[in-house]
Amino acid sequence: MSTAPFKTPEIDSSRSSATIGKTVKIIGQIFSKEDLYVDGDVEGTIECQDNKLTIGPNGKLQAGVRAREVVVLGQIKGNVEANDRIDIRKDARLIGDIKTARIVIEDGAYFKGSIDIVKPDAAKVNAAAQAASGAGSSQGLPKPPAASPTPVASAVGAGATDIKR
Amino acid sequence: MFRTSGTAVEPGPFSSQKGQRLAAKERQTVRQSRGLEQFFSYINDQEGLSILDLAGLTQENIDFVTDLGHKLYTQDFLRSLDDTFGREEFTAQAVPNRIETFLDQNLDFKENTFDGVLVWDVMQYLSPALLNATVERLFQITRPRSYLLAFFNADEKSLISPQTTFRIQSQSTLMLAQHGQRQQAQVFNNRSLEKLFGRFESVKFFLTREHLREVIVKR
Image 1 (cartoon, helix red, strand yellow):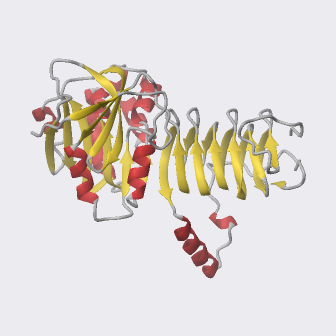
Image 2: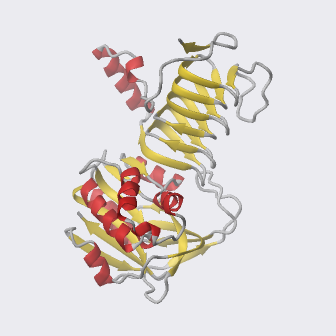
Image 3: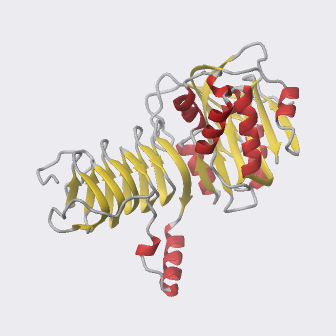
């Protein structure tokens, strides 16, 4: 994975962020506690709870995704959950179901699936109900399309982005 | 029949609505739509419905439907059609096993899934065989007493119609953004449409000034 500075208009320089470069392929589960920029291939799941996930123009995901905010410039095949918002840019392709509080779409974007808008108050009620019933957060993660769980890369960066083995 | 008027809008490089950027070559018209008004009046008092939009993604349509509390499914049917068969390749669209495969890939929903379908003008670009199969599939995946809204070019002398994106402005107002032209597979009149939707309970027509026939079909 790339640790060199990667200049892109999507990365907010005021927040730390990790990058998966365009030549990198990961098969497995990715958990991040910082913003994450993915410009490579990922099969599995990506969870960036409370952070922003950006799929770069070269990014190709066959993965379920959960983040605070998701910006898509590349391709995703899988369900996407964003607590705050999802931003789908004009050359993006997204096949899967979306659950979010807000969605912004540019003309030209391709999307096939369902859109479920969940307002923040409703989301809190749902989360409280799930906590009361004892359901764990991992069980609620959007499911990817049939992906192999075998990871092939090790964790990189400042340690805030973990890849499950 | 019901005629409505429209207001032409000069396109600009940027749209002020929802931050959308529209092509400068688009010709936009904002007008009342009785068909749209009827469609939403039928589902107005309900929440949590499942609505299918066959014209793909537009910010306005997503916002309008989801603000009503409904779940929206979108499928850019024409784009998939072109990707699968090639643009305006009506002969290729008539091959039975290809039709079945195409519908399995693009309308792969369980029976009785949808409470409403926004077909827009998609159907006029399907070959007769594909069109009949699509209507049958829509019958299967919609619930009883659900509604379909479809638009057809009312000019029976021409197979060329404007390629249009329909953006919902309000329950009874549409913005028509026309960008180029496209060849239809056939012309339509009221009788042919009644026959097309023969399995459905009822078909209601509205005719607009832009030679557009708005059709409300009840499942």
